[in-house]
Structure formats: C-alpha cells, structure tokens
Length: 294
Image 1 (spheres, rainbow, N blue to C red):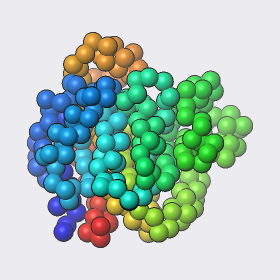
Image 2 (cartoon, rainbow, N blue to C red; image 1 turned 90 degrees about the vertical axis):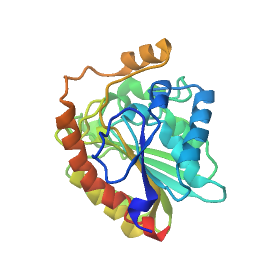
Image 3 (tube, helix red, strand yellow; image 1 turned 180 degrees about the vertical axis):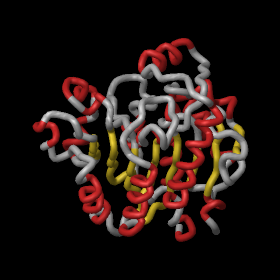
C-alpha cells in the first residue's frame, strides 16, 4: 500500500482547507470545540471511540488541526499500539515540551504524561523547544520524574541564552544540533517509532500557528525524519499545528486557553493555508516514507 493509503485528515477546526491535502477529510468538526486546548476524560474517551469508528484500521499517519489539539496525539499513539504487545519510541518536534504536571489531565501542554502512561512506550524525546517553559523557575512544572528515570528527554534551544545554559547537556544550538540529532537517531537503531510534528516548532515563514513559532525550518525537520528512517522505522505518526479560529464548548476551557496563549498578530487565512501546505509538502513524504513497510 502507498503512504497515502495509510494517511487520513481528521478535520476538527478547518485548519486545513479543502483541497490543501492530498487525501480526503474525515469530518469531525463537531468535536473541535469540545476538545480544543483541554478536555475531560469522558470526552477524550468518547472521541477515541468516534474517531476509531471512522478511521480504517490501516490508517497510521494522521493530519489534524491546530496545536491546541496536540493532546490527541496520545490517543493516536494508543491507536498505533493497539491491540497490544507492540513497543514504540515517541519522537516529537515541538516548540513546547508538553510535559506540565499540573491539571487539567488532558491538555495540549501536558499530553506527554498521558503518552507515558501507555504500556508499550519505551521512550519519549522532544526536540526543538524554544519557549520559556524549559528554563529557570518555569521548569518546576515539568515532569522531572520521568526525565530522571530516562523515559523522557527534552532538548530545548539554548542559542542566545547564558553560557551556563548553553553548556547544559540537554540543550541544543543551531550550529551543532544536527550532529547531536544524528547520534540520537543512530541510538534508535532497530526500533519502531511514532513521530509527531507540531508546526509551531517551525520558524515564522514556514508555519502559521496558534502559538509562538520555533526555530526549525521545514528542511530541518525533513532532514531529521530522514535520519530517523535511516536507523529506525517510523511506523506511525501525525502532524498538527496549522492555525485556526478558536471555538470552545465550555467557559472554563476557553478561560484556561486564552490565559495560556500568547498574543499573536492577525493572520490571512489564505496565506496561512499556502504556507502550511508548502511545509506539509516538504515534511509529509519523509514522515510517511516507511508506511509501505509496516
């Protein structure tokens, strides 16, 4: 089967306009306001059942909406692990560590903890974090228990930071990150991977998102995916992060989301769609290159 036959677009919020992607959308937009930014257990479980019912079992690579829905990756990962016995390493490209230990339980900023709850997840690595959550007192809210155990690693950018931060073994810099990533990929030899790409990890000009932009270029991520495929096999994955207009089902959810989001300039939806589609065309073929060998 071709990569396209393993791929699907789950439309939650219109982030990917019709005709942008090379495969049809599964219309689940009624769920978007209920799931955006955060959701209770019952909603997540109901959505998992609803999405499983409309996605063919061979679908292992998913495109969905804004990064406000990144917690759905824990559900997609659960789907990839089913029916059990499989083991996967999760690699995430993201401008945020998504490791927050505070409530709510299901949230785009804490979903890696839900992924770590899943049997079969060997290790999680997040590359390209560029926001404040990885530095100073903000780190207090991170999942350091799993960092200490070795199950979780977070690799933030240190360019422009004090020399002490740049010297930290877990930090990365523009002039050396590819060497570090190459060694990381080589260490995954023989493993099966789940890879998630949040477009907010990319620089402005390569992605238009609901969050502040990161520092990867689209070509950087494409190169990194090729490195992963050289040593391991990308068995499943997803891509999210395209900007959309927020809608919420609950006032508490709306308040939490608007409190956490940065202020961003207005955007032109047509231009955003063009930029994000171009980046999709660079990244998606590399993400799904191993699909025919699953």
